[in-house]
Amino acid sequence: MLAAQLARRGITSVLIEGGGRLGHGIAFSTDEPAHVLNVRSESMSAWPDDPDHFARETGDPRGFAQRRHFGRYLRSILDEAIASGRVEPIADMAVAAVREAGDWRIDLEDGGGVVARALVLAIGNQPPEPLNAVPAAAGERFINNPWGGGARAAVREAAASGGEVLLIGTGLTMIDTVLSLAAAGHRGRIVALSRRGQIPKAHAEFAAAPVEAGELPEGLLELWRWLRRRSGEVGWRAAVDSLRPHSHALWQGLSLAEQRRFLRHARPWWDAHRHRIAPEVARQIVDMVAGGRLDIVAGRIVGIREIEGALGVEIRRRGWPLTPLSCAESPSSSALRCSDVPQTFGAPRPSGGEGLGRFEFVFNCTGPLGAIGRSRDPMLRRMLDDGLVRPDRLGIGLEVDGRSRAAGAANLWALGPLTKGRYWEIVAVPDIRGQAAAVADDIASLLQPAVRAMREHKSNLPPDLVEGEPPAREALPGETLNPLPEKDYTQKQQPFCDGEENDPEIDGR
Image (tube, rainbow, N blue to C red; front, side):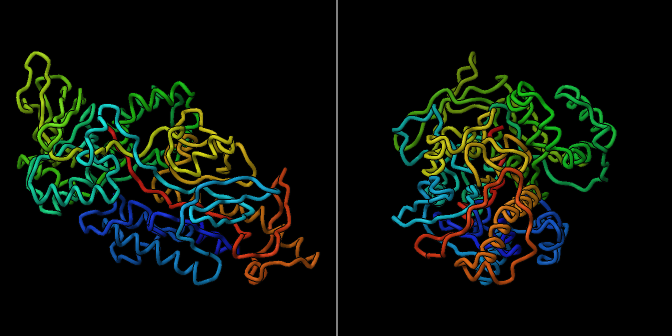
């Protein structure tokens, strides 16, 4: 999105993506028809100034399009920007970024490099951190990255054998993995486990009930009470969605202690109600639960060990002996409701609510990496170590200011999930498209005065920046605008976008 926004402003950029998902990202690179958007088409335009852009493509504004179709839509926008000559894609991995003579030098895995005036980190969600309870001996039967090639191979193998599968986490990644298993023909039992057993609720029609910012209370506890009261008045969907226009201000108005309290205690319930799934997906989940093919379990893992070509997982259920097993769709709310009935795994211990289950595969569906300081992305890891970026005060993303500029170095921005410590609600396309447009404006205000100055001094300006230059903007306060050097395709003097756009995943409930 950002590369296309920059191209609209006449600014040339280099887009580096080493994962083979250029223009799609992780969530939208799926080729499975069962994977559909979690947001209606009418809200998924890539352009904030043309909100019906994607809906016109689908012809069904209220529908939930297949994610692979949305991926093609994003790729078509990128292809247009590439065809304009203002975006140059590089299929390689960025491994380091250093400041050099006022510019950024980005080193590539193949030994090449890029020099840029501005650097944007848009790497999206990162793979989850390995679980402490999983021993190294678990090997290929434990799938830590549910979005990788190993996960696809495991889904095919599990479908062929019909063996039981354990999914750790009951959020959107769990939903995707269940759908993948079902689409592959898996007919065995699937167990989805999280501490609270919260699963995403279903979308349904409702009457909007917007509120003004002045009507909302201050403080986490007061806001939570307001939300419960408002839900009783207008319905929980209308109440939750009425907070969307105010989400950034509400989040930033909380104290650090309140933000931490939200993440620890309230987030599972908020995520389940805020990040909903398509009605057709909810119906499939309900049918699988009712048919005994999917169990939603509240509990935690005590230990994992190898047993005869499988993994033995010891599970302690929450509130033993009652465990959510059968779910039904409530006609009044379209929410998934689970009734509490006993459930066993192998031979449980009645006194402790523990049981040992045998699973052919175990998938980590707890969601993306939640601690930025543990990132294994090579470039981001080095930038953290070098002090060029630093974690936000919650440690869930990078510290950025109100313009999404990263703290620690000049001419550096971050997009999407990397900025959720500041904005929180910044993981969905409707949020990121606005952020991308704002960052593009900020970059343009930095680069375009330098372009004008170079013209006045008859410098060796790259031709693709001279042609069709939009109206120049003034420099931002405190900016040092260094002239652009002569263009060299071995060392490209352009804004640089690293990685992919957002991949919406809310998990680990």
